[in-house]
Length: 249
Image (tube, rainbow, N blue to C red; front, top):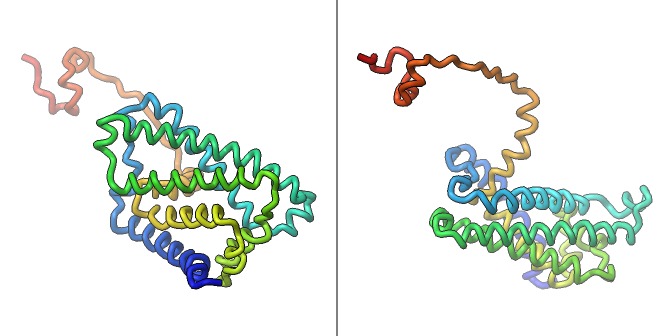
């Protein structure tokens, strides 16, 4: 193993995890006002109605699909999912989701940089985010379709390495023998998570916990307020509460 392999697959993942955790916490605690998607719907919503839902759904699908890397091969075999079945599911479902995700990303990039008022609302970190996201998605699609025949059984090299990172014993040798395109894909993915706390996409962590918060939240009661007919005749009066509006003479 070369020193580069040791750094990339044995040290760099922990640097990324540290930046991700510490950076996210600091962003939430010290800069809560920046914890936002910076919604741009008021600038342009026509393309957003199509691209945004597809992008978010496919992104969730791809992320949850990658969680399968934490399941050992022996466990999948024990429940009747052999290598061929696993590969076909990853190829067709994962590949299809990746393509749809890429198309949605192209539409969002076109929207972001093709409209002047949208481009003016784009920061440098947004550009870095789009570049890393594009590289990660494109390389993931290429890696999936380049292994159409299933000749590279990544469950024997990539997935053990992923699991080894979280137990503090990185299997650097497993990654060192992996094809280059998988290595570049994983490196871009790691770098994406390293810059995530400093981008608008950090709001994804709120989305993960939002559902649990709503379970314990009390119901909100909405009541219809009867508006004085005199206020209806004077639109300006609606901007002031009762007894503040100047009386009509």
